[in-house]
Each structure stands twice: as C-alpha cells, then as structure tokens.
Image 1 (tube, rainbow, N blue to C red):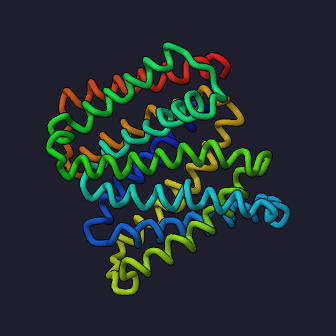
Image 2 (cartoon, one colour):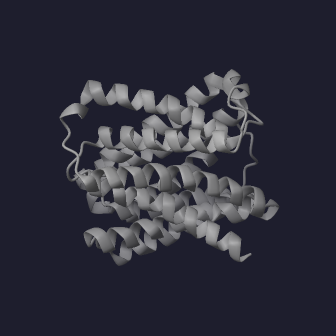
Image 3 (cartoon, rainbow, N blue to C red):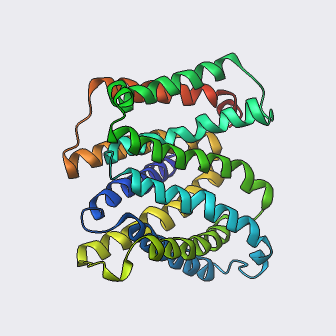
Length: 292
C-alpha cells in the first residue's frame, strides 16, 4: 500500500509541477517554444525507455492514425492552449481546470453518445462541478470578461478536447502498449508543435538560459515521461479507482507550487469552489469508483 501511495503522490507531483514550470519559463520564453521543447525531450525519453524495455516499436506502427489523433487532440492542442492560458491565469488555478475533462466526458457519454447510464447524482455532480469552476474563476471575472476568464476558457477548451480524445483514442488503438503508444504520439506531437512554433513564433531567436534548459528537461523527463510510466504502473497495480485520485492531488500541487514559487494567493471562495468541484467529479464517477 505504501508503494501505491508514493506512486500516487509522485504522479501528482510530476503532472502538477508542469503547470508551475511552464509559468516560470514563460517569463523568458514563448509558450509555443516551451511546449515544443518539452515534447521533444519527453519523446526522446519515452523512446529510450521503450528501447531499453524491448517493447515492440515496429509492431505498433500499424496504429499510426490513432497515435496521430492523440497527438493532435491529446497533446498538441491541449499543451498549446494550456501554455497560452497560463499567460493570463495563475499556475494554481490552471491546475483546477484539469477537472473540466471528467465533466465534459460525462456530458458526451451520457447525453450525446448515451453509452453511460443517466443518473440524478451524476447530473448533480455535473452542476456542482460547473458551479465550483465558476467560483474558482470568479463571478466578477466572468461578468467583466477579464483576462483571467480568457485564460480559464483557453485551458478549459484544451481539457474539453482532451476528454473527446479520451473517448475516441481507445477505440482506435485498443490493446496497445501504453509506453510504446506514448512514444509514438509524443513523436507526432513533437513535429506538430515545432511546425506551429516556427509558423507563429521565432524559436531560433529565443535566448535560452541554463535554467530554461534545465526546466525543459525536467518537464520532459520528470513531468511527462516518468510521470506517465509511473501512472500506468500504478494503474496496473492498484486499479482505476485508486489511480484516479491523482486528479484530486494535481490542483493541490499546482496551488502549493504556485504559492511557493510565485506567491500566488487563493481566496476562501476559490477554496470552496475547488472542494465543490472535487465533490462534483466524485459524484459523476461514483459508480465507476465502486467498480474500481
């Protein structure tokens, strides 16, 4: 049990810290260059891991279309809007937007695809989740159309598309090795992100410091590659229910990290909003949690 808890905390720290590290590098680097750089390093790390573990890289090539879809929806779009959004919103509040994904998944699977059963508690959770996010962003920011709202909407759109990807991708490439698959779609995403960076930014004119490079390496190896490997190890060892607790810890890591590094403050209303979001997400996934 102790190993499971440590792994859970490791994944939350790895994924949650990425929001803080992105915010830090944005002080001297463009958001597109940041994401293209970390994706490149993450791809190389995952490729090396796949080779060392002697995974079937060649055999998975037949699933290239599924990997391309995930690269576009699950990484490229998400990472771009997240980096752009963090130019307007704090790192701590950005991590709370992770909870948009299960809310959107519930809407699609219950009301559109009808692949999941309708439940009153689920709808209550959805409403609670939306109310909680409104409190986190701030009613005054929403009504006033502030830059904070822009940042929140950008990141929320990324996790909404990520939710759509989560529904589509498994059907396109079921039964594939998660580590090999991640190496493939990260490779595709690396190409996509660099093309976009060269079109809309000026990567070659970016003046990198040793600290910038170090942070990019940390994000690529620690936040992405190792976090992903440990998450799937935990998923196979402890099951979906226990592993899902990661998404409750990520906002805590982001908020604490944002306070330590940037002295970001969070109000009592936002704390209440975050708690309401957590309850909402739990109610939506209540039946799945029982099965797990």
